[in-house]
Image (tube, rainbow, N blue to C red; front, side, top):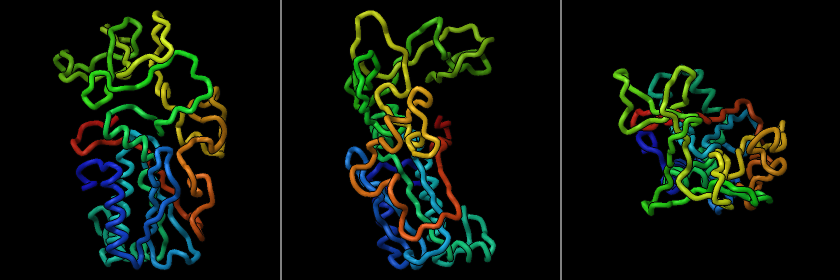
Length: 288
């Protein structure tokens, strides 16, 4: 299913559980902690004798909420690795040299297909933009800012555009010069004549003074950019938006060791793969 559509949280965890139940000898399902909304962040361990010390490979995806294709790629990699353990010497439906397949069977793989389950669920179920986590635990919320909400009651949180000579966006036009239908917004260029637009989230303005409309901001109602909240090379908010209050402050984990705690037992990382790209959805249209 994950090769043809994006999976919600229940579908994703069902797939992981299915693999663990079908192959208990070399597939183990656990959790590295809980998200701010109480969802387990699943960890799939693939390899014989998972507690034996040896080189390991870490694969994670979907750290940013909109990058749901990272989950699909992580699942596809897990499926290929499981297939190799079952004797199928191929990856990505292409033959794999025997020595490479043997090396994969001897390694240990840790796969976290969805680091940001809360954000991904908001994206998939409501269309709301979330950078990583929908949590907004800023201490200062006295300023005017946009907060996403379902204004028209259709179950989705889309976007609103307003024509503005100072807008950063314009409609994408075909070779005939006519705007595409449905419209696609793209950044304006110096050669473009307009009309131009500003794009706002569907929602309302918190602390609106009745006059000044705040500019749209990608972290307006969600503070964290999770990969900027790690301790390594952390910088404060005024230097790196989305960094949070301090290293590891993001409430994506409620209990458990989580992303900032000790690694899995006997973890010696030989390879590290972060799957962050938006890529293309199953329909073939651009996902960015």
